[in-house]
Length: 422
Length: 200
Image (cartoon, rainbow over all chains, first blue to last red; front, side, top):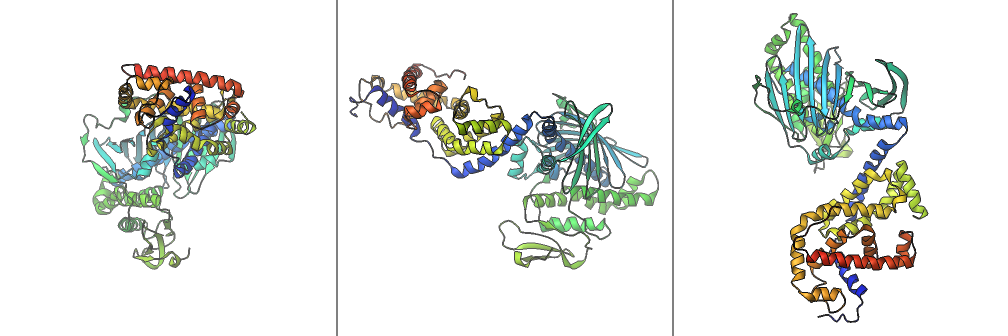
């Protein structure tokens, strides 16, 4: 026994309370340093949303809604391109864009996407919290109209594509999702970093304009790839119309009839095939970063549909645009209403490769570009077969040397100091 | 609040990055310590909780009202709420600690009330720390802050008075009431057959 007779009641209680501190872990300073950055970002985002000035209120709301909406529209356009290319018989890969739609509030809108060749894709979209997206799209080429629905659940990593004409239901599964991407998708309340950056940097005000009887104010945001004019209700600060244009591919997007609702019918996001639809085999899309094989496959196919020229940039929208232009060339050869089906027969091999690129090579390359900061592309203006001109390079994780790919698609490995000059 | 805290509070309301940075620098480690001692977990558990605390604080900082208390009062309240939510998961551990304490028969309570020696190993036992944490979560925010400040952080009555916008004499009186409250809650917690925590 300890001799405690001299201790006061306060002494005893003091000793007792201090026991709570005995086995408490000491501060992890590295962790706290990281948390400072993360919490600062959250603080700034929240504070920004809470500001009472009209402009800031407007911009805060745009931060939340505009990026996801625009991304969804572009996904729609790309999706249609894939279906066209595969004549309704192949899968659709949404992998490289899924990160963009993470946690949209319940939102409905109409969209019109105009591809560089003038083809228009009309659609309706519903987005809900939890990474749920439903897109209904309709595209008219010649006498044919193609209708399709895509239901995406980014939380579960599943996609269901419904092709109305053939009554086909194509399920998709995303695998190998990088942890950082998954964390971002599940935890982040904001959407894509690039568009957030755009909105944050929006300094140009476009003035007032009345749209469908609603007085609006306009703001223009831009980055290297996109320009967006965003028109918001001058009273409520909610978006009324958003017009975006990709600077690389000239793809245009217009969003209108934008509604924000508390709830939507959960059946809209059901990934069960509707009655009467023929279930196709599940398409699995790996989100693991690709490598040389994916790059070679993608660029070989891409240059084939571009008359031997490398693209200006490696960009999904640009790929979709090139694919659409390529399709139109074949359509002209047939000059009748069944052009699409004839194209699919005559050029099955190449179109199959293009379609498959979406689910394999393009996704792999996009993931590589996203996950590897050293990736650099400079193939603009280079022709396939140019063995002396480097078109891209990157340093694989854990390696000392860079992988350098040349215009004839051969690969060399070299130290940073030996990289070609830009 | 002192001038520096006033400045931080004003900055938080305006969404100023520097204000958040100052707040974080001032209190990050203190929040860690508070979370660690109330939770009693390992470093990873503490880190998770500290993250929750600062994310919650970041989301409500622009609405911070200095009339309702100091910055530390606000942060420690968040810590308490977050710990409470997690501590409920440890009901079995608390029950075991209670049985252990009661297994010492009267000796433990006699010591606590000042009429005997501490049972062997009582102050070193993990169970005692668990019961102390359980009690600290149950008493009021003010009492917890005073007891922790005085008996763990080793702050003087004068220092606590500055934090509480009070006088040293008043703090001593409040400390007495805080100890009484602690003992009363502690006794009640170890006495009750099944532990339940009132909603906070």
